[in-house]
Amino acid sequence: MSALLAGCGGGSETTEVIPDPINPIPPSSSSCETSDSGSNSDSCGTVLIGMTDADGDFLQYEVEVVSLSLERVNGARVDVLPSSNIVDFAQYVDVTELVTAATVPVGTYVRGEITLDYTEANIYIEKDGEAHLATVVDESGEAVGEVTLALTIDNRNQLVIAPGVPAMLTADFDLAASHTVNLEGDAPVAELYPVLVAEVNADEQKDFRMRGPLIEVDETEGDYRIALRPFQHKQGRLGGIDIVTDSETSWEIDGEAYVGATGLTALAELEAGTATLAMGVFNRSSREFTADSVLVGSSVPGADLDAVFGHVIARDGDRLTVRGANLVRVDGEVQFNQTMDVQLGEMTQVSKPRRQHEMLGLQDISVGQRIRLLGSWDAESALFDAREGHAHLLLTRLSATASAQTDSTLEAAALTFGGREVAMFDFAGTGASAEHDADPAAYEVDIAGLGLGTLGMGSPLQLRGYVAPFGSAPADFNALSITDFSDARARLLVGWAHGDEEETEAGEVGEVGEVSAIASLSATGLTLSADSTFGAKHHILRGSHRTDLLELDGLPAIEPADSMFFGRGIYTIAQRGSDSGDLVFFSDFESFATELDSRLMAGAMVKRLHARGHYDDAENRFGAVALSVVLREAVSVE
Image (cartoon, rainbow, N blue to C red):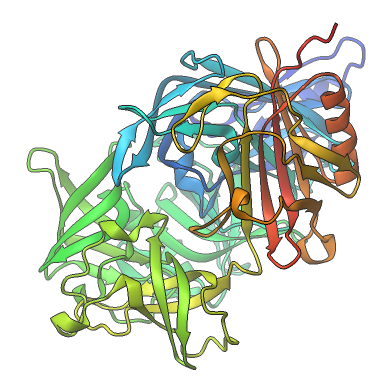
């Protein structure tokens, strides 16, 4: 249920229950109140809602989430979004934001409704290395205004709210599946049909980000409680949650580093209302959040100091150039910048969240590194001053292709840093001497201690770690983990046009006949029709590695992934009606296939298909742990 609950507003919130006249609910259910302390009522429970996003084509995707409601099995509806919110979904590829701990009436929730407003949207797409403001249109080519979607969960995996047992609903705004992007012309155009995937108590979770003012600390229990205040809001309290800490939790409190219980003790000395931001994980069995790292007070971005996030693309002395710079002001304003100049100084404090034991300095900031800087922004000089601020080195995602390997070193062709093409990075000064400056075509990665087996040469890889200190290469990058995308985490993107003019990848426009996109469909999988004409998207993506379906010997079979290895699947059908749309979610492929077949038989046509899972090159088979199919409005059949 999706783009959800980014709510803002002050104090506690009372969920508004719209009664069902046929199946009324007890009057006490309408008084469920979202507050710092939660609820002890037997008629109320807690729904935790997290928001995330799959990879897409967008640098910024800022839209207004107008409203969200959930509906119980008896028809009673609960409005859980206290006010509209501006949300940049492109910032949630690597993290899930916990946006509310809402108190709602107990019961089984089977449907919902969400409204998004694109009237004042700010959406940027990268084209030829530059950020361009995109126009978002519907399938008729008209600018998109408000879009309302009905959401339905299948009966095998519904959202059940019970007293004292929080339920987690994770919403994924799948930007890749939601758009067909045309980069031809002066400005990019993105045709929209929103695909928002909701999972109840999902098997796998990204790291959670939990923000909000401090309520209290319990050193005996090893936890602390905050009032949720997501995104960059300066006001509002969207429910209280306890965050558990342990001996390995890293802390930065007003610029000072702590580890474990010493950080919790320091936190206990601060006043209620102090700003906090935690990164951590959600335990499905205990329904608890455990913090890996915590920022407090002036260390929280935008609390007392302006903050900028992005990747370092060049360094000249103590001057950085940061690409894809998201600027967060102390007043709560958030700006997107193509590039930004940052001035460092001898007083700049440098640290790595979760690795507070490392003693770092300015030399540890190098080209390619993902970074968060605290300081002050001077709009007149267009300079971010971090000379007396902080520099947080964040885990950096590198996509590369393996070319040579020893026990301790991997040589690879670097493709992207955080999804940004390597061509925009200037590696001058990264080496111990000019001849040792990092070469993206032969990028040297330190893999000592990872215990990797032999990687296939040419294998598509995703590495996570930190760029080596400036002026020290080789090695160029210190890896903490490596994922071989030959064996995991692939995405399949396919688009079609039926009887319409659609821009193809080569920029050619032509009429497409009424050929079914799906050749066969059953409870065990589906195959695509080789006779249909594809639009611009017909690829398998593994990291930044792209395989064109049209260059394969045949189109891959798409099957539900083996649940033994991948956990529960999530399969989605999206279809727009005359003035709204609906999304239906399934946790088993057979039910999904039955519903999809019924809609196709009624005249609906497949517009887009997006799958996530595993691609087997040898068998040309795609095992989908998540699959979204976007349908055109059903056509009348005489």
